Length: 261
Image (cartoon, rainbow, N blue to C red):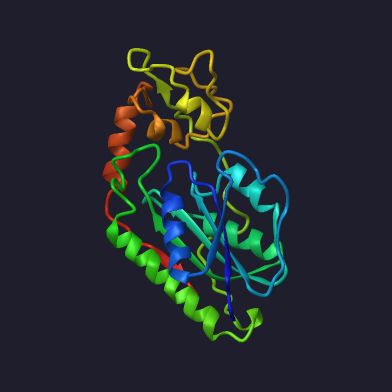
């Protein structure tokens, strides 16, 4: 197969998923067309129908599932027996049913998912877990994964000649639920620059009070913490320190990416 156009669809609140999915796409090689669905759904349906196109989808794992906004965006992406790669990023605990959820969605929308991978990024709620990841070793493995995908595509006479990997996960998927830990702002540090307001994927921070968070909307993705230029945003809840210590002790042993072909 001669793939020239690589469409990349990703939800990446803290930019780790974007980093890895770009590394994979670069290693495959071709004209890369990005669709960042973190802050908004695509303006219209995305349809890949040409013989020279493929799709890579990347999403983070939140409590064993992909974010609802990412799931909604994927419903708008359609193929015609088009080769696809599914990829998720998790915070070193587990990715549970998220990778299977992506694969199932893609296959249901006219894609042929021939490769899949679960990679590790810094945990968005407990950032001491997998701190500094993806690191250089992770990016090397992402590139190697992309090169293997490229070889499989080059060797295949057509999409039907590609494999159908079994990926980890269960059906029905685990029930999706929210993490009850929402970041807020420190009024002594906040300058009301509105960076968090502008970049919050859930629209959970208002211009009138950027130190507060609408907990009914917040998805605990950690973007406001990462993008705040003054270090104002964090989780200040009572008991958070103890929860962080326990989680860090339980899930700090380094896990490595898993790939499926």
